[in-house]
Image (cartoon, rainbow over the protein chains, first blue to last red):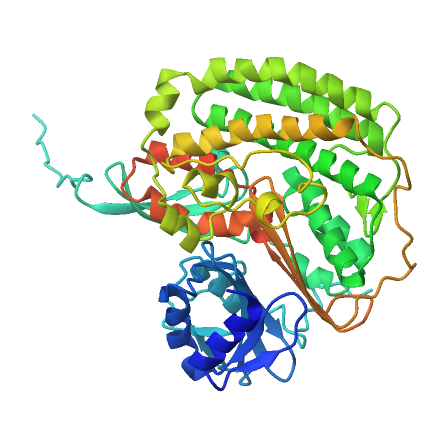
Length: 152
Length: 375
């Protein structure tokens, strides 16, 4: 499916998805409440078949926290980027996708550890790199650590 | 006469217990700690504990300029340092729409493949050692040394090169480079036969690897297992074929594919890939075009505000670099999708039900580099 057809197909599935201009990938911002059901459709529908989650990133945009999913279909070769936002910096949570794409399990643990985004229904949401009891989430923009991060 | 006390003996065949494998264990190839649940000798499940060599490279990138970031990427997967550098260079070049000279593309492709051979040699020798064949270690390192000598002569370093810069190369190749590479290919074509004689055909090795640690194609895709490990399961994931960069679209090479997805198949993928890499180098080495070794770049590199993603095929799988720029000379956010991180997530799945000795073979065949997982 080319990008124009794919865009129409996705807007048909989630009418309130917000299209974002991006030169490289077709990008959509998905409302968090609809995200998990939409992700199941993306993988299971034969003409979409997004079976390969090749990157999952967490980003701190200061006003909100964002999880970015880079998806590819191995059979159809088309690619898609989804973004899910949460404005709650304390308890912000996004539905897990590790029941759909198994690779997400460790990626989500990393995102929780370093960015402090919680994932609902994740089977084992613990810190991954840092030790239990570490205070704060280092990849956030407002993180201050005078001991371990040297300012130049 | 002493009274005999009968202590209650626990039956360890029935009871589940946990042992720590690592962080200091020769077969984890670095500081990876696996908490393994065992019943007798059988692995019930395992949990990886990472972070022993976490340096926060993504956070450091937010304070560094793009040419400085190249030096950090060397330290992720240090066995495919050139390929990691290549990813960041391509990201910057594509974002700025800089056309790099053909000469640079040729040299980068040759060096990437040399790097891939060197990495697979080190994998082969340590895999042999994991299986109990210490001779492999000496054979592999002896031949890898030849590549490191070529690297050293051309750009002065053996492991962490930082030879690529955004727009081109740090300096031109050494006048002896082409002759040395051709001599190496001739030498290694002979020596790789020894590898097969010593390990591939070995009955003990085959018995220990065939049918062990099977990963199906669906699981390989779902777990994001790429590189030779993914292709052994039949997942066509070679970035060089599907999203070509450098001059990979101009050379003739096969995407080595397997079907069974067991440990032996993963072993064979890398053995065959070394032959393919030599084929690629032979096609390019005599045809390096003359010209500049770098495009003209501004002294301060600033990417236009926006998002960029670059994929390359590192020795262990797909390396992705995701960069968000706000128009400054440093990135706003830099994320590395490292191949080993995703490959690790499949380890629990494929090692359930195998014996603990087979776990060593499976771990060896997935070819971990721990700094790439922890970053």
